[in-house]
Length: 251
Image (cartoon, rainbow, N blue to C red; front, side):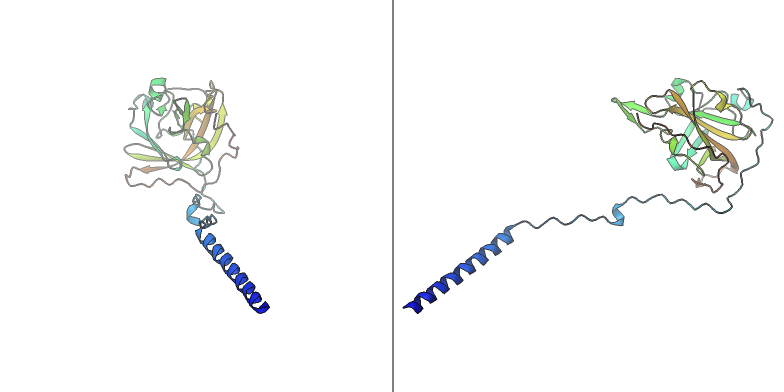
């Protein structure tokens, strides 16, 4: 009799264990699978811009030539008087900029695009300063936008190329200097003693109480070629070691 009771107890215990195991299996199978651990692959990361490494002996800067032009005042050259609005393009490969250069820097013109100062020289005038002005940003629905060519001028630096293009030539320039000036400082569009390109815009963005100035030196003149690939960078060192000034790039 006792033996029968013992077997009954053992069978009951075994059945209970099996029932618990079966229930656990059912509960586990009904749970959602755990979320996978996030992974980051090379494809999910932005590809950094890779520039050529500067060589030990970068190409030399062209010798300065002032062309006999005055460097202490503004003036209007005959070639500037003859300029036809939009007949020249400004190309900045690093910023993906390719825009026509309009005639003048009055507000109505600058609302349409980048304009050539009345006192600018043309790129084929030796020692001339091709000075161009443009807005830094637009404001839409109370928000500052970056969809204008000069918004990212603060990213231009050593080795970066800029171009002026007309129907017969491609004029290549390389960054030389960046500065911030007072709005009534006209000296930046004077001739500088060498052929150059000067871009002016407002700073800080959204405040515009100063002027941001980027200057580039002319390094080459090429015959016009519609298939020219406009290199974005040139290993030429730095003509002016002055540091790029910092600015508030957002309001």
